[in-house]
Image (cartoon, rainbow, N blue to C red; front, side):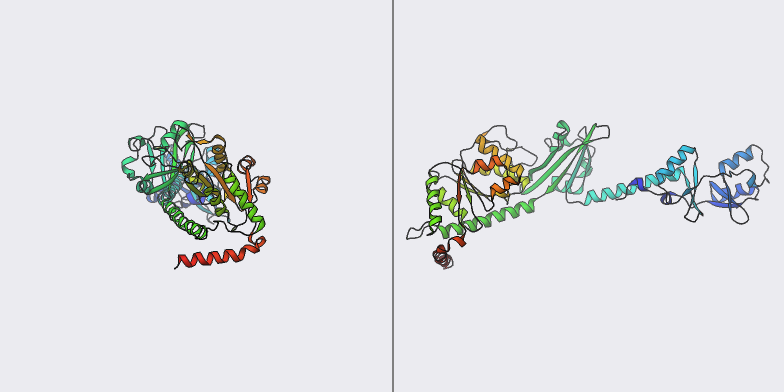
Length: 467
C-alpha cells in the first residue's frame, strides 16, 4: 500500500486553468475568468511562450484601485513565477509554497511545458483524497482478513470491530462500536492490556463450545509514549484443533495396535522381543530401573522400539496400575503447549471452558508420563518442563494454587541430545534432569539375529488382527 508521503504533484494538480494573450485588456481577461470560473490564467505572447500569471483576486484588486479596463494584462501580471516539476513529491511542493508564501504553482512536464496548476486547495484535496483511499483500502483489508480485529481506546470504548469479530463473538459492530467493551465482555483480554500495559501473545481460548481460538493483544502508544488504546487479533483454530483431536484418536488406535502386537501371547512372550545379547542387557537394565522412580531417557533410531521399552518400564514398575500418559512433543503446537500440558483454570482467559481443563501432567498423577520426541521440544517449552521436574509442582494457566506433581517421567528421542546441547538447541540443565538413567537401544542393523523372530511375531499378530 503506497504511503501518503509518496504522493506526487501530478496526482493532485488541477488542469482547469486558462491562457490569455499578453495584449488582452484586463476587462476581457476578467470576463473570461468569470465565464470559465478560472481562479488564475497564464499570460502568453503571440508565440505561446509563457510571460506571467495573473489571478482573479489580483486582477479584481487592480481594477478596484483604478487600473483602466483597456490596460494590457501584461502590465499587471506577475512576471517572475515559481514553477514545479510534475513528478515532485507533494510534501515538497507544500513546503516550498509555505516557505515562499505563495498560494499556487504552475506545473511543468519533463519538456518544460505547463501542464497544470497546483494550489493550496489542490494540496489539501490531494492529501485528503489519498487518506480516504488509504483508509478505504485498510478498511477493506481489515474487513476481509481471517482474524477478528478489535480495537479499544484507553477508556475501554470500542473503535473498531471487524466482520470476523462479529462472527466469532456474536456481537454486531453497530451495537458495540462507541460503547464500552466491558458492558459486553467484562473479562476480555483487551481490558487487561489497558490496565497493565502488557502484551499477550498466543493466548488460547474457547469462546464457546467447539470454537477454539488463539489471541494476541498489544497496547497502542502515540509518538509521545502515551497509552491511547489496545488492539487484539483473534484467530479461529477450531479446524486445526479438531484435526489434532482426530490425529490423537488415530494415534491412540495405532498405539493400541502396537500394544496388541507387543503384548505377551499364550506362550508368555516379552512385550519387547529380542534375542540379541546387547539388546537383552538393555532390556534387563530397563526392568531393574523400573522398580525405582528414576527418570529414564531412552535413545535410539526410529523403529528401534523406544515406546515398547517405555511400556516395559511402566509395566514392571510399582505404578503399573496407575495412568500411563503418552505425549508426542512435536505434535503439540507451541501456542497450546502450556494449556495442554498443565491445563487451565475456569476464567483463565476469555472463552475458557466453564470448569477449566485438566492437563496431561494432572492426568498422569500417580502414574507415568511418556515424553516421546523430546528432542523436538522448543527451547521456551523446555524451560517450562524443567521447572516442573525441578519443583515437582506446577500451576494451571490462570491458576494461583500449585498442584503437586507425583509423576514418573520417561523420555525418548531419536536424536543425540548431547550434540543438541553443544549446538545450543537443547538446555543442558534439562538434559541432565532427563538423563538420570540412559537406555540406548541398538538399531536393527546391529540386531540381525532379532529379524526372524520379529518377523514371525508381526505375521502372527497381524494375521490375528485381520482374521
